[in-house]
Structure formats: structure tokens, C-alpha cells
Amino acid sequence: MQFKITSDYTPETKMYAGMLITYIISPFLGLKMNWMTEITHVKEGEYFVDEQRLGPYALWHHQHHFKTIEGGVLMTDILDYAIPCGAIGRLANAILVEKQVKQIFDYRVGAIERLFGKF
Image (cartoon, rainbow, N blue to C red):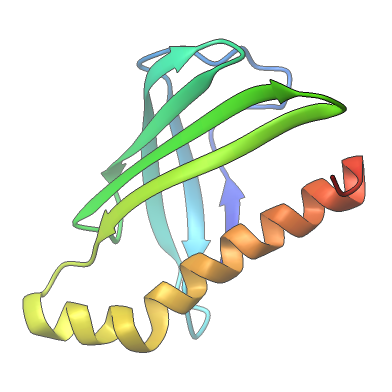
């Protein structure tokens, strides 16, 4: 799934509760969709939470936790999401969405390892 941040967010932007981040995503077949998440909780250096406000999910609640460990920082994600459309959505999740979500997180793990090394 491709996504592009369309809000004024940059890596230098300080995150805060209430911050809205907008994206254009392409979940499959080149279909483009708008997605908006809100940063709902932040404790600098420890965690932040983003929740979908507009987009393809019936629910998106994503916790990012950080813990200083010897030699670096351990990052842990807790993701709760749901797909709309009842039984059809559950089938789409089983066939496509769950794999895409896993690929997104696998890609991020790989990118972090390339930048900072494996622990």
C-alpha cells in the first residue's frame, strides 16, 4: 500500500495531541483514497497514539511505544483496526487487508534496521 503525507507535517514537526495528519493512500489497483489520522495522546520519548478520523477503516487505533534499552530504543506497536461492510469486510480483511497491514509494518521494521542496524 502506497501512501503520501499531504499535510504540512515534516520529520522536524513537534508532535502534539490534537495534531491532524492527512495522507493519500493507494491500497490496491491504483485506487487513491484520502486518509486522516489524529494524534490523540503523546508522552514524549515514551509513546504516542494515532486514530483514524477519515479513511477506509471502521476503526484504526495505533499505539507506538518506545523504551530505552542497552544500545538503542525498543519500539513496540499495538494496532487495533476493523474493516467496514460486515461479512464482506471481514472477507476482504482475510484475503487482502491483513496482509497489507503486515507488509506495512514489515517494511517499517526493515527501514529502521537499515537506518540503525539490527539489535
